[in-house]
Image (tube, rainbow, N blue to C red; front, side, top):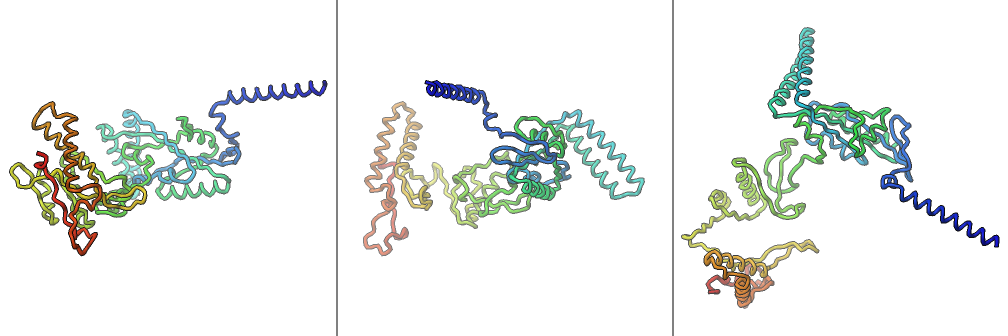
Length: 424
């Protein structure tokens, strides 16, 4: 009897403890569940993130910037440097405050220039005079509405699994940033505030700001490279930032498709770019191009490259046969190899749609409906069937008896294509 009571008592205690655990788990938020066990902020130059695996974090802030920089090289290492988080706080400065601050800077620089001139320090006088000229130019641009000033604070945090690795990565980051004349400092004694500033809370606790104008502000955004174009292709020009040539290959494997569109205002050089691409692709890569030229501006390009100009008009002898079909080269999605195909189903649909459009435009009748379209489609398909043309590319050519070069495209003669008069 005593043993049974003791067993029931143990079971009741287990149920109570289980209920308490469930209640505690239900009270926890997602933040509490994914957060580490704790963070030790007692060290003045790093933090210890205590979890199943201890990690170390050290935060930095940008202390100095170069007078000029190359886009987008300025902060690239702070974005791409291993396990690192970088936050940038950007705040616009009011025009009134910008004007007052710049006027004060101009007066200080002018005073410093006069003092350098009195001492006979020509180098210092020249440097200060240049800074004063740039400050005046910036002030005038802001007053005219062509520019604007911003305050930006840049904070980064490195994460490692050991103190030795943390010191090594910190030195390496400082060395890499110094190559672009960017000075960074450890958030000495304020690691906790710097770490919190680098979290997505929009709370900048460091307040180590630098002034940027509208043009230089673009250098802080995380573009990974200033290079454009492809490793192979035709030359189109030079990169103004790096001086390297820009090559463009419209059929490069990195592109998902071959489509391209050029946007620009009138006179910006859209036609020149297109003519350059067509001519150089023909000479350097052997690519043939077809231009639907309503204005006749590509006539000289075609003649210079040994091409032909086909004039299509109501009075010309040249016509377009809608029924004419050619083989296509497509890339197999599985093997990646190119193969020859004859998509006769799509051709029937294209011809049908063109004939329906012509019928609606000439008759302007409501009788041209889906039934009419179905009848035209069946008639078009029968024309290809009568000629024995199907999805097999070889069905497009006549079977020549006694041909010596079997399988060679040059030994084949193409069948005569049907025309609209066969449907009448």
